[in-house]
Length: 135
Image (cartoon, rainbow, N blue to C red; front, side, top):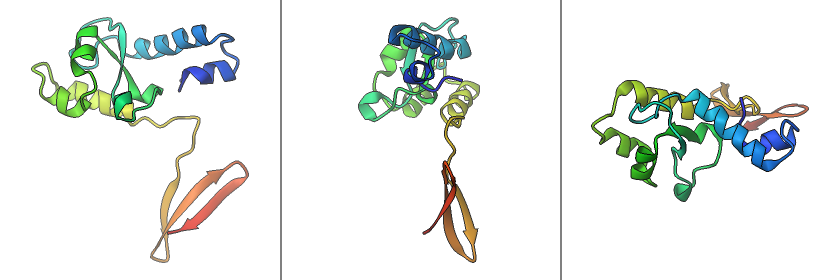
C-alpha cells in the first residue's frame, strides 16, 4: 500500500515526482472501481474526504475515487453531512468510506493506550523500544 506520493520517491520506487504522482493516484483509483459516493463506474477524480481547505491531508486514507460530478458538488463540504443528504446515499458505501478513512497506515505504529494501577498510560513506539508516559 502506498501512503503518499513522496513515499514512492523516497523509497526509490519512482525516480520522478510526476511518475510517483501518477502511480499514487492509480493505486487509489484501482481500489475504487466505482465512485465512492454515487456508485458510477470508473471514477476519474480523487476526492479529499476531509477537504484540504478544512485541514485534510493529501494522504491515501483521505483520498477516495469519485466521479467528477460528486467531487465538484461536494466541494469543501463535510463529507458525512453532504453524503447523507444525497438521494444516492447508501449505508454500504458509507461504511466502505468509513473503513477506508480509518485504515491504519502500515508504516506507522499507533500509540497504545492502556491502564496500569488505575492510571492511564500512553505507550509510544520509538525506534529503540517503547516509551511509557503517565497521564
